Length: 250
Image (cartoon, rainbow, N blue to C red; front, side):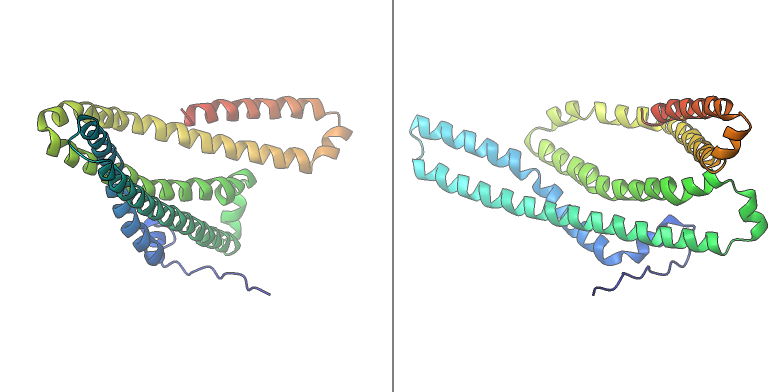
C-alpha cells in the first residue's frame, strides 16, 4: 500500500519565493531542459531552409540525392532531441505546479485550523472557500505560467532575434519594432486587469457565501415563504459573478 506524500514545511508561507525555493530540483531540470529546448526551437526553421536549399541544388545538379537524405536524417534526429527536451520540461513544470499546490493548500489549511476564533468568525464562509480553492489554483497557475513563459517567451525570443541578426540585421530591426509596443500596451493594461481580477475574486467569495447560506437554510426559507426572494437574490449574485468573470478573462 502506497504512502501518502507528506507536504513540505514552508519557512515563509506568505511569500511566493518560499515555494520556489522548495522545488529546487524540479526547477533545475526545468531550467536545463527549457534553455536547451527553446534554443533548439530555431533548429526547425534552420534545417527547413537548408532542406529547401539542398533540394534546389539537387534540381540544378549541384548536389547528389544522398545529400538531402543525410540532411533529412540529421533534421529528424535534432527535432526528436528537441521534442524530448520539451517533454522533460513540461513534465517537471507540471510536477512543480502539483507540489506547490499541495504545499500551499497544506499551509492554508494549517493557518485556518490554527487561526484565532475571533479572526475566523470575522471571515465569511465564501471568502474562506475562495481562498482554499480558487485562490490557490490561481496562484499556482500563475507560478506555472511564469516558469513556462520565462523559457517559451524569453529564451525563444532571444534565440530568434540572435538568428535574425545573424542573417540580416536590418530585417531583424524592422521585425522587432512591434515587440516593445506590445510590451508597452501590456504594461498599461496590467493595473486594469489586476483590478478586474480582484473584483472577480470578491464576487466569487460573495457567491460562495450566498450558496452556502442558500443550501444550509433552504428549509427555513421555504417554511417562512422567503424562498423566491432568496432565489432572486442568488440570481443577482450569480449575474454579478458572471459579469466579473468575463471582465477578468478578457
